[in-house]
Image 1 (cartoon, helix red, strand yellow):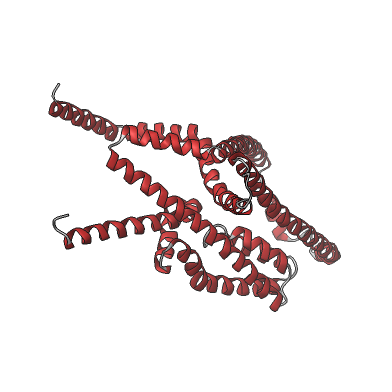
Image 2 (cartoon, rainbow, N blue to C red):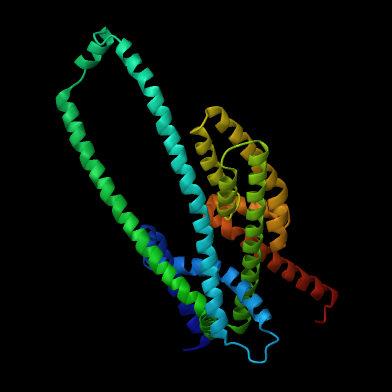
Amino acid sequence: MEKKTKQNVFIVIVGVGAFAALMNLHLVFRFMEKVVEIMLPVIVGGILALFINVPMTGIEKRMRKMFIKQKKQPSDRFFRGISFILTFACIALVFTLVLTLLIPELADSMKGLYQLAESRLPQWIDYVEKIDPEAEWVEEILAAIDLEKMVQNIGSGANLFFESVMSTVSSAASAMITAAFGLIISIYFTLGKEQVCRHAKKLVYAYLKPAWAEKILHTGRIFNRCFANFLSGQCMEAVILGALMFLAFTLFQLPYGSLIGVLTAVCAIIPYVGAFISGAVSVILALLISPALAVRCLIVYVIVQFIENQMIYPRVVGGSVGLPPLYTLVAALIGGKLFGIMGIIFFIPLMAVLVELVKEDAENRLRRREDPVA
């Protein structure tokens, strides 16, 4: 069969397949959903490995610098294993610090709420006793009650409740299993990243033309660099925001300053959104003490968050990935609208990759115009 005939046959097959897919979109979407469900642990593991690789690579580079003057260098496996252990130790340390600060504060708040309710209980009892139980509105309410219908509603509600409980338990168990497998897969990805990259590179060169393969690998290298810079900048910005929150809470004599500072720094890993999670926690904790204190806490938190979002974040994170502040805000907005939190996290480095590729293409086009012979 001639080459042109093969191309025509391929075009016909692709066209027929595309037409069949368009006519059965519900089956296509169901199939894609099933594939994503099956591959979800691998996807989760890959995303976790992408995050773990950034601090792990930084620790490994610094360890290699420490041993650079020694005649006998440790093996790569030694550096990889130690950096992996130190990375997970740092993550565990951060979570332990947050829980150590959060749990006692929540316990004290609940204890204060219980004491407040206990002190107000006599007043509530006196109020109830002053109400005339033989009032006409009480008799009307009691007469309007349909006991048989109430029993039926209670039975159907109990069935729905147990069904929802079983569904929640099943979903939680499935999520825990997926997370466990994802964590295991991320460990394999992280410890064997050179082998994984080598195999991926072979597959790309084997099934694509050299020019396309080189473009794909070049894009992957740019994304890896941009994501590492983005995550480093995000961590720096989180530390800055946590320090600002601690100073603001201390200056305005608001409670839980150290707790909110640490919690804000941890949650701020999620761009633009994470800090509001810690803000909701701070307002709830302040509300348990006093509504007026909660309002003051909300005002202080919103002001600090606004200043950080408009002045600090675009310059720290945008500068780390080489993006102007406007591009950083636009990338976070589009990513959040399309894919939620994960979209916010990944669209900033993706925007940096896109800008970098467009710059390279523009420079190549201008170079060819200046030198028409090339």
